[in-house]
Amino acid sequence: MDIANKTVLITGANRGIGRALVDEILRRGAARVYAGTRTPMQHHDERVSPIWLDVTSSAEIRQAADEIDTLDILINNAGVAIPDDLSDTDIIERHLAVNLLGGLRMSLAFLPHLERSKGSVVNTLSLAAIAPLPVVPAYSISKAAAHSMTQTLRMFVAHQGVTDHGVFLGPVDTEMTRGFDIPKTSPALAAAGVLDGLERGEEDIFPDPASEPAAQGWRIGIAKVLEGQFAALMPETVAVTV
Image 1 (cartoon, one colour):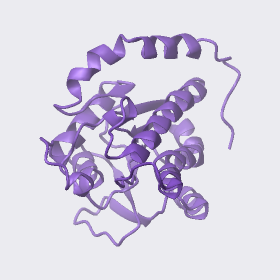
Image 2 (cartoon, helix red, strand yellow):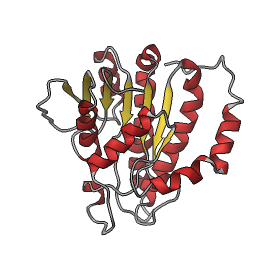
Image 3 (cartoon, rainbow, N blue to C red):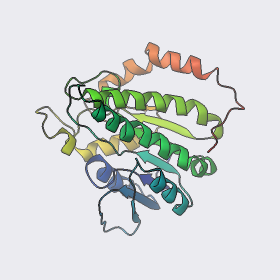
Image 4 (cartoon, rainbow, N blue to C red):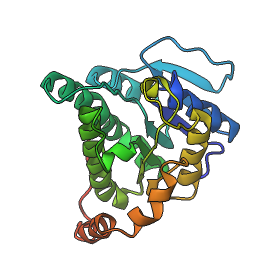
């Protein structure tokens, strides 16, 4: 997947990694970037088209899918991370609504666009999808679920010519990690790593110095082996319809 001359939609595009992805995609020569956001956003580059988009709203997702006539890359980046102790299931449900179902609904809504372009879905995950962080257990649960969704959707859309990529980010210096006194990667470096992995065609992208050491072990590990074995059972005639 070469970014140049492509049309890209990014959710959660107004700050942090999302904003850095917008800038890096433009630097790589994209033709159009749709920046999904729940707050007003301005950008100096005329190739950027901000769109009001709450990924928990089925109506707003449908409206966006109707307004955008062509799409090559969908980046499901919108996310929420709230410290908790598992005592409040409402917090868990909020994480699942954004981090899991938001990405799934977006992927399904834009699948016809991506099937026409033989495009890609990119889901922003986390190392917490592989092993939970105790300070954000609801976030960890939701990212693990989003990882499973990514693997599952990957099996279903492969025969439709669409690729599905998971991004396993380590700590990035954004508002979400402001309270954590740990080494962090800059959003710009993380965004560049995400797009490098996409352009290399990596299904599982480990884009930053904290996550990269886990890449080789993950790709030869039993979880990835089983994913490949189970995917081989997928009938070629089965396709996702929306």
